[in-house]
Image (cartoon, rainbow, N blue to C red; front, side, top):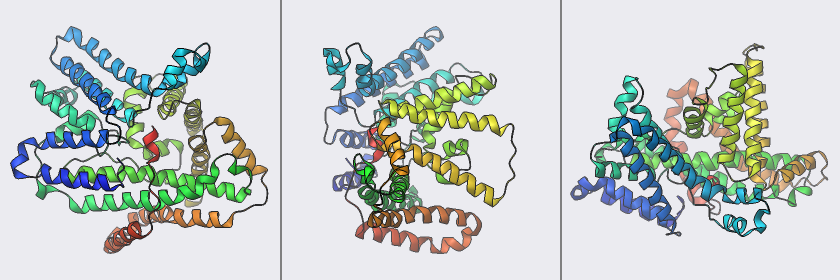
Length: 474
């Protein structure tokens, strides 16, 4: 069920009505769970069984970590993480493993693995499940007072209450299929009765309008122009056109995913839940490290907390630090899909982070707006070029595209270039507004309502043809 579809609007309206109904106040959490199950099962009812299985795994393992004898808690934690990863590997990477088998996809096992469907959102709700298991385990095994006292808030003694809370945590429909990835300690303390009068309407409205504008007006219109990135269409246009297509896709993927995240955050506010910020104007980054603090923040912080730090982080020497960066980005790339092109994409970013860290300790660059602008342009160009691995099905086609830029024919496609610049302009203005807002916020706030009204009109009058969110495939 798409956020920008009529059935979804109906689902949200009905859920809000029942959720805040006085006679159902004691059943608020169950109302949200039921709505989330309907949302996930819409169109593919069989997938609901997978979500229920994932909930069951995390309810049981996290509960027994909290209440079982200390000598068995580590075993429960290992079991929980293993089962979570097992589901993810089986459903998401079966086809990749099939190609690595002797005989490849020609064998009966290979053919079976390639037919396994990819359940929507499995990467996101699996990582949330691992967060729950790990945080409960850490809460019972560290000497840190704050961490130790967080576990009882996550896992109450009452099993039914924990089942209810975990079912909501795993299935909450605003973030269920594409994040933001919410950690257990961020969500569980918010599970309490909500009141209609406490809804932050202004914040919710702003998030929803900006989010839907980025998705429906920017991303959905850009997709028709960036279609020409695909093979063999990219063999004909000029270098200028090919560069503009790539620039447009960079704007599209930001608008699509940042738009989804803002819609999710806005929906969360409607139901009384604050979700983590997922994008913080990443194309303003002056370094690759800064980019990963601004892009898909919920994933990068998850990888930092549950992979980079356990590997040793930067505490075990320079070589180990560079290796840890490479491992984290390689696996982070592979998280995006069962294809080696995503691993290559992660490797590019891992190498960029490692090289940047190496020279950062040896070269001290002055700070001025000219140099900062050049650094932003360099990081943006690198990131944009790497997006080819997201857009094209194979690494070879990505190389062919780059080759076509330097060996193109004189077919500029001015209409397509103009369309890309037109629908990319709102993203650039969005960034400019953010920069100006940091210096002249009181003055600009007076015009914010007019801007939001204009965005709302654009949503109604100039939306592109609906398309699934790009990150649904991950």
